[in-house]
Image (cartoon, rainbow, N blue to C red; front, side, top):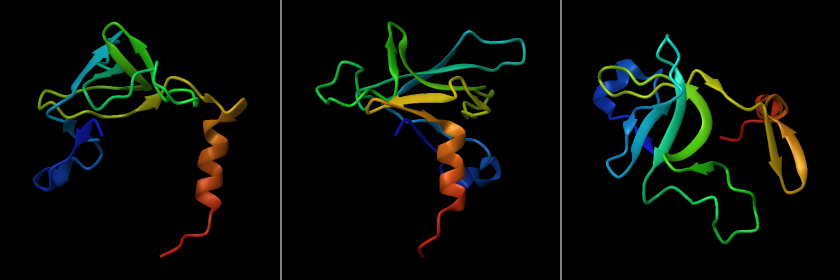
Length: 112
């Protein structure tokens, strides 16, 4: 968890919220419209050199880790996601396309 949205900010439900108190969330390669690559750093962010045999969900850089997502951070500090930077995920020696995962989830039966 790197962001949170307090209930009193429900009017901003289109955002993913504020950076968690233990996280440093900032933008890299910011475009003129204010959108940039989200970089996340904190004690709760798994290092790309972890002990798991699974590939890490984020890649490391000196500035932090990137979730491969793009978006702006507004003047209040709210983080928004507007796009993904990669449309393909390599997992367990398989190539997954994000749209395939999204379609499978959209078509799945909902269990209540």
